[in-house]
Length: 361
Image 1: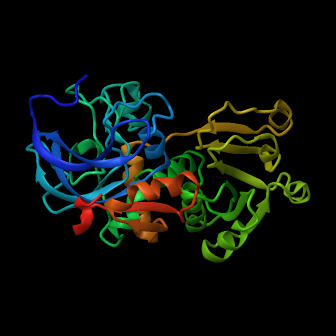
Image 2: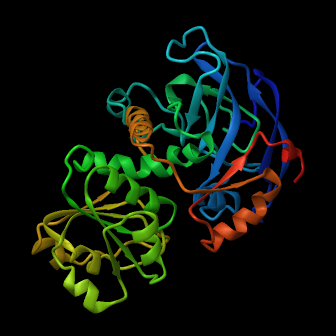
Image 3: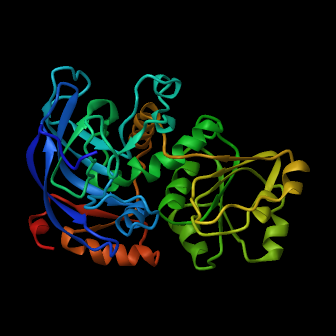
């Protein structure tokens, strides 16, 4: 493991955290030369995921400093390796969470690279050459073309960026559970944040009756009037939860805070499925009776493979689905991180990497 290897000769301007304070400051580092399987990307935008905050502050105890976060990256290709056939200079592209995988296991062969035991992330990972990966809080990226997707021409590059994490995180379990091509289901969404608001958009676009489940009464107006949800359940209301028992076919739980799954499971019909995409700090407590007497299933899901990611992007292009974002400049990253820690964002911060003020932090 090394920060760089001898072929890292391209000097890049970026922004990094250097210790557990998580403070992001300007950082000059090097990236590898464009190889035969690589594309070089001029980064235009990068979303801020809650993972960035955790990693910058070493909340999970795995951060390798200095860390350049960012795995919701959109930009334009400036160079293409000789083995690359799917991309050309000038293409609008995106890079999400994945930087590398073994390419040989059953999961890689079936385009489930996100479940490969040797999968490495776009930042704070170890690339094939042994170097530490640096993410999208930077001006330029060199990526293996197998982990790059096309961005449809009708989608704005800033609002499309969070789809590379938030979008695929929602799309993958929906596809896995036949919620993409089979309209007319009753779908529940726990939490209305960066993931939840995308789930509402997908649910409606795919023809489902969508119910948002939240502890915040203030989210009802936003869910229904702005995002188009059909129903809203205040999960702290025993009466509303009781009325909604056994009404939903599928629920996707986006909440990362600790919460009980028992009441949520009771909302599912017999044979219903609860998909978990949040990551609470403490283990879930799953009561047995709602599972046994409802023949219900609880499943987990993490991001998605590259085929699904491209499919998700294409679907978003056809349905004109993007994320609701707050666009910031790099000098506002630390302020955005503080607001993100308080869940004060509607619904995703996106950094305008190409802005002229990007050298001021």
